[in-house]
Length: 232
Image 1 (tube, helix red, strand yellow):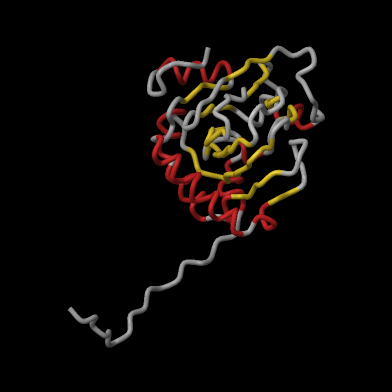
Image 2: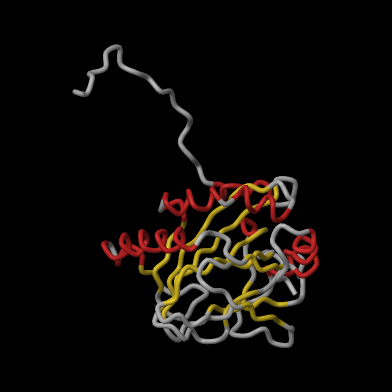
């Protein structure tokens, strides 16, 4: 279930009916490796600036929003045309989020806010190459009902599926309507993940495009009357 060719009609049907679909190799392996290496180098130079208290995780994590990191923002925006092809919808990016979990950590079961109508949880790397399963519930909730549910350490009586993702693989899911998390403790010393989100410009959350961020007003490119020439 959810493991069809990403460009097939069966993929879209599975995604619409089940709330998720697996996207193997959403980005080429060298791109994923270089991206993670760039982020790792930048975080290592300023560790305190990116180490945060637990949110849906149990331990402190390295994490940041894409609007604090332009490499991540470009990566996210660059995947938008691919997501449009996969979903058949007119999507706009909202935001992306990077996180590195620690060994023994979990991700509590939860649903997402308005900006996460169509979400992509992408595996970037494991320190010990041990796959840590992503879990998603089988019940679809209306957004208003999902907002009333508390975070939990498990899915309770709700049936759920485990999805195994290798670096470069991702799962596309409807984050506002399906609960998801990782209830099995992380078996790696660390694991790095990228969560990318979009909204449907024809859907109920269209006003959350770009996560309602305020960008600079468009300016003008003015050239000086004389430009010094670089020596040949």
